[in-house]
Amino acid sequence: MDLAQGSGVEHLPAFVTSLGIGLLIGLERERSPAAKAGLRTFALVALFGAISGLLSDRTQSPWILFAGILVVGMMTVAAYLRAADPEADPGTTTVAAIVMCYVLGALTWYGYSTLAVMLAITTTILLYYKTELHGMTQNLSRRDVISILQFSVLTFIILPILPTRNYGPYSTLNPHQIWLMVVLISGISLSGYIALRVVGERYGAPLVGLMGGLVSSTATSLAYARHHRMNPDILQLSVVVILLANLTVLPRLAVECAVVSPGILPTISPVLGTGLLFGLASAAYWYRKLLEKQATVLPQVSNPAEIKAAVGFGLLYALVLFCSAWFSDIAGSRGVYAVALISGLTDVDAITLSSLRLLSQGKLLSVEATTAISLALVSNICFKLGMVFTIGGGVLGRKCATGMLAVAFGVVLAVLILRS
Image (cartoon, rainbow, N blue to C red; front, side, top):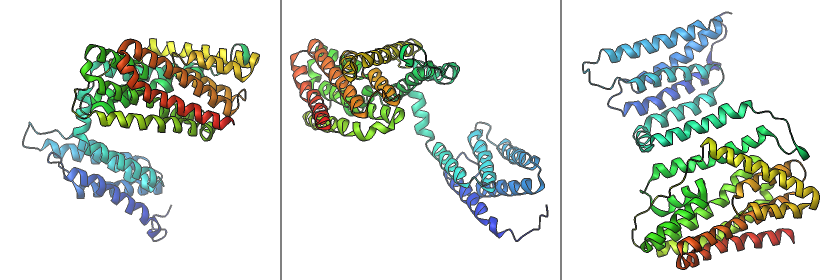
């Protein structure tokens, strides 16, 4: 192809984009004392990447691109090898950033400008938040790293090999779909588990309650009921954490619905929103009572990504799914409601996901699935409130009852209005 064909001005936007990418990443590196490359170097490397892409495209020779990566990498490494101070930062991050900048510049030539800009912003964020990311990893224990690895096993090893066929009566048991729900719940719980470990005691009751609720509102409620029983002085703290942990269940269920069956959101959102609004009013009241600084005790929660815990939830979900389909066939939606009330005593996620599954199969209507989820939620709240009364005592139970029953009242009220 003729290299001189056309003026080339029509390709100027690609080079302008690559220049902007280089300047963006170079701006961050310019602020780093250890970096030996800044604005000009990164801008030139990005432009070099775009030019290499042009030449490779016009000559139909991908080796030009690869040669450019080698040249950029070798020149950068050579610059650091000439450093006089042997104790200085070897600059591996900057070397990687320069190579990344070259590749992003090449992407702009091949028509991936939007993707290149997004990746450039992500790269800049990773470079800028070095201290925060380093501190975050320092707060993770060996147990936390194992949790992440176990979740990876659940997601990327077990899930892909499971069959996607339906088995059993009513064709409700699909191994791949069941394990996908396990991955969903484990992922939500693991994010809260890691966040809880990272924030530690630095941000007090609000975040501990929220993160504890993501992992397990039941475990968090149980932990703080015990803490209050051993130390009555943390009464207000325990109330706030327990209420917030239970409030977190509502947005958690909304996320599950959005991922599994987005079509139910217009029906279930007002129900969950009303419960959340009623509960927040009570939680805000008790939080204002928490006037003086109290030491925040972290709840002891188990790793949600453990194989044993994942298999246990998978079996529970499969059982609830089967029972829901069975009772739905025998007694219609009333059978599902009965299963919701019983299963909700121990776990609200299983009946939520099973109801959404039946909804997707056309065995339940949106209103019926919403009612089943709401019944399970109310049943779960009542169970946890009874647990707080039993373990934490009457004083803690009465104070928590205002907020937890407010959530239940809001949910029931919204369901009654929905079904009227």
